[in-house]
Length: 360
Image (tube, rainbow, N blue to C red; front, side):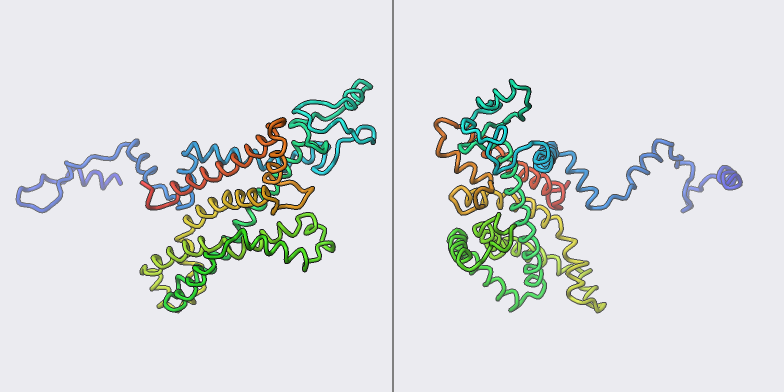
């Protein structure tokens, strides 16, 4: 290295007619410039770069925090609060008839007498309903049901939509034509009517007494899941199809095809990873749509079976006493708004972070 520096210093001056590079015009990089080059040359994956951009979005981060708090509540509260969603308030083994329709943090006469004797009573954070059941626990269980339905519906839509859209978009031609016409037919089916018809048919055909979990959900909820699997995947299928029709024209897909790769491998390894951002965004936006649909169906009596609560059925039950107990409608409605708004804002943040067309 010393000999090289010495040879550079001793190099003769450049002749005006020479093509030789004049080394005297070059300067050594400073330490700060070297550090900048290290930062600029850092290798970042697509997912990592997208997550960085997502974490810089305050609305998306706030939505993640709200969803995490809600998930922790539905997991922890049932183990902390001594009431169940179907338990009527009792004191010393006796039903407390005066515990119905109590305001938040209010105690009944029997509970007050029990507390004066030295007993401890867990407070009713959101009061009680018309049958004397703790309303806070029912809202938490209703949130668990609605959120579970939304996530389950999103998973069904994701799986069926990706498989159907991938096959239709990759093979194209007559296969794509026939499959898309089927999608058009499914689009024309009224989902509410099918839920009603399936509920009536399953109530007569399906024997839910042998299955405790199905008996707890009821035939209405089972028919809702079937409708989600039959009808709600069409939007995802069209989205995936459109992405694949564009991506399959790229050179790397043609190279994989020429090399002898099978169609399944090309779709799985080369095409789907390049449209995963759009799939994630669509799935995140599908969850609040499914939650709102479940809440609407439960509101009109086509959701979960009593006494299992959902946010929609709680709002429907609170509607009867809205003049005297308006706060009962506020709690489930506020929870629906928070969940749907959080998922919508998170979906917008994912779109801004992962969509290549919107990235700067």
